[in-house]
Image (tube, rainbow, N blue to C red):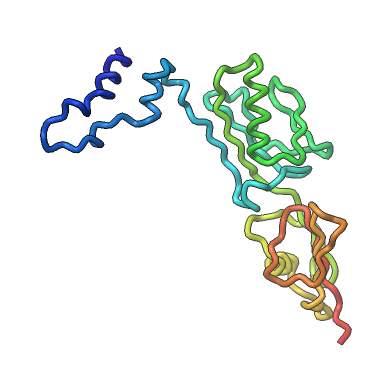
Length: 209
């Protein structure tokens, strides 16, 4: 029945009343493919992936991050706020331990979907989000040095403020930054507007004047 109706719609533009634009009766391309290819409506279901805005889609999960993986209408196959352990692993229902360290949200989505397709679900709809990030660290001439929870949009200036501000001996021209992603190449003399990422280490130097 559905195929018959849609087939009529596909040819409807050849019998339009005078004065009507053909595009008003055109069938959406996706729906047209369903008719022409003999696919089922369920075959065109989209799979959403939700990522956090930090560093765009290239952000890579690591130890200390908390992630959620939701499978639509499958609460027993979903995890919420699970922390990546020191070995870069999360425990997942039925799938066991998954090594996720170094994966982007898209790659984590693909990993879970592939495993669920292997004998569990026919067409899983998987959504991935990063709920909280690992700590960043600030040391040197700030009033409360230590590790702090990362929040999106963090800069050196904001990190200093969260650490109680500069000490009287601090030099705002002597701030260095070690990226967790590239620890062998520290950034020297970064500005207060420099963006901070999870796992980074900020060092505020001392003024000699």
